[in-house]
Length: 422
Image (cartoon, rainbow, N blue to C red; front, side, top):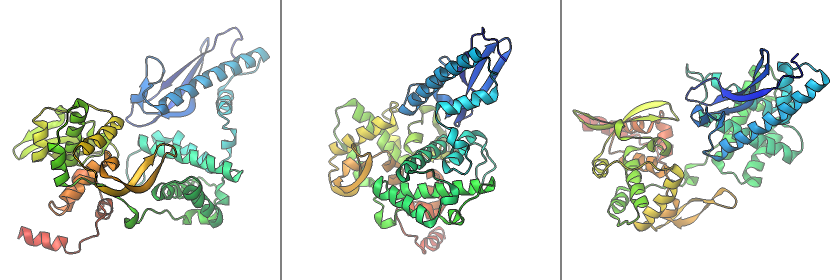
């Protein structure tokens, strides 16, 4: 038991610098060699952590919320420790873990029969979790975020039905109620609701492996996605890219954004990967210039050829770095200046409901960074062998790739390709 006169100090630290979300620990020093290291229940990407301050960097809302939670935890723990010392109570690891959970009202999650408990268990062990179908361990940061989002959905659904969501209660009727709540009450897209059902089934499988009693229906839950008829894929054709390239722009921000947009449609990468490309990633080979890209989502290194249009853009100088959110705003203005105002079916974010709403809009209002990768895949489909395009975009299955560009499988394609090589 620590001496009542010793001053307790708390510092927050990470134990890993891996390129994935890792747990945040608090280190409690009670003096005279009394020292504890406890998980806070929060995770963060090491690049978002400030070692100097011992808190998350304040570069987005999620990190700001995490810092607020950590400061609340620090205040709560020091108060609990002072109270315990005044009473002469022992301060040990179990005491600190219990008080940490109490700070965020996590006591209910000690019930392993709860869906929310299992999701939190996965989040807490994200850094050591084996990836299904691969020999690697450690969930990607975006995957951890998706689990956190799903947990929040579960907790909100519990408030709606006014009772905890347990694995043994996942009857067909309750799962159907959950699906209707996602689609009708919350107004989520078909894909987002379908992914939530997929998460529910996956988490149920994990719980069963750990010996948790589950409803027989839990392993029969069916996920779903939008049908091809319901998917509105907005792309930029070669003719439209020509118009964008020739458009008269006066604002430097738009000129810079146009360079990234045109490069994106020629390189076929996701927005977050595109914005990480630097001049040093370009190399020259005997066959032409290539750009080395690391695809964060698939954890792949790919070599992307620099097309004639990309060469023209890069001849003007390498574009300046731009935040993805600003890029999405600027390219709408770029496309507007290029006269892309054709009325187009699509979905646009409603700023009030924070949901995408289907409607007919001028095409420039529907353009986002994701149009880059889709435009590349669509424009070069059948001009270049599908497997070659997939190697650049990072798709592993042809069926997924064809769904991505909303194209039916051409049963004659391989035969025609064979004849062309002959």
